[in-house]
Length: 247
Image (tube, rainbow, N blue to C red; front, side, top):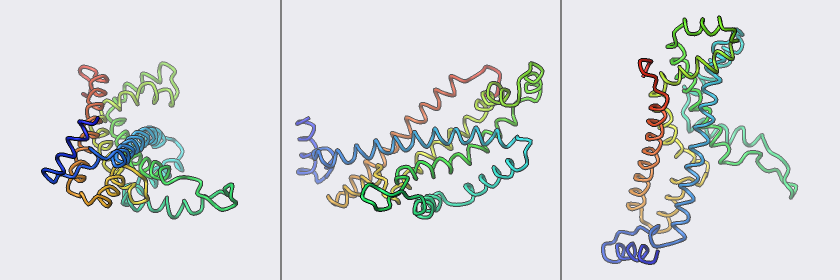
């Protein structure tokens, strides 16, 4: 570790490259905390958005018109408004209403800023996932659904065991694109002071005046995070591949 820190100290003293996260344990800790927060925010948002997308696509085919109208409104709202505005809406508008009384007798927010970031980003990506899953569902042959009904499967069983697994295989390329965009959109959490990687980097370059260096580190960090996600999605796509079907 000492040689590691000495190398970055040498870069700064001899070449003016001020990467404080290399030789300053405090800045390094702040940055790594930001990376970990971004990973948690991304993973939770991806999981919840997939659940929202799968459930929403199933509800779209519901015989109840009121449910179909609700899902249509949900999709239109989150697709037609900027994600930053949605984040502000949940944090400042809804968050100021949802309060509880703390131990000190003062009102405190029921949901943290991290929680609102997860909720907002999950709903935003989930609305897009609904349409992505729907396109995959429409690609499933009607004869497959009819065969499942002939075997005695009800609508939910047909969707969960037959339609959804096949639809995911068809929709996975589009789904992967949306999930990659979701990871990049987590930078918006900076706006409500969630200490993710952009927030941590901004604190460091504000204190150390090393904007150039931290901007490059930030860029490389997101390239690395997205590359890992793309690799996972490719492995998932390969594992789900059925020869001769869809992919």
